[in-house]
Amino acid sequence: MNVKNINFLADESCDFTVVRSLRAAGYDVVSIAESFASASDLKVLKMSVEEKRLLLTEDKDFGDWIFAHGEEMSGVLLIRFPANMRSGLGQAVSILVAKHGSDLMKSFTVLEPGRARIRKVI
Image (cartoon, rainbow, N blue to C red; front, side, top):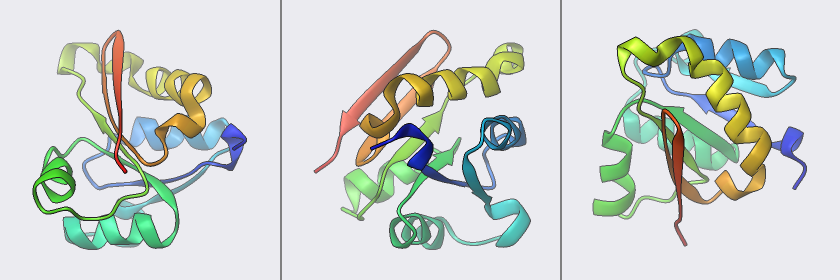
C-alpha cells in the first residue's frame, strides 16, 4: 500500500496540529471535530472501519473497545505526548506515517516521544 493512500479519521481528542500536519503532507484527513462533533467513541470507531481510515486519537478508551469488547478496527494510532513535548507532535506523527505507513493499518499503535509500539490486531 502506498503511504499516500492511507486515509485518516481524527477523533475529537486528537490535537489539531496532527490534522494540519498530515493535510499539509497531502493526506486525506477527516476531523470528527469539524464534521461530526460529539459522536460517540463507538460511532467514531465504526466510521473508521466503514471508511477504511486509520483512527487518530489521544483517547485510551479505544483500546478498551478493541481489546476488551472485540470491536473491529481498521487501525488506531493512540498518541501519548506529555504537554511539555507537544511542539513536535505533528512532525512525530508525519515521520511515523512516512516510515511505517501500511504497517499501521490493522494495528493498534501507541506513539510516544521517541518511540512507537505497533501491535497487529487480526
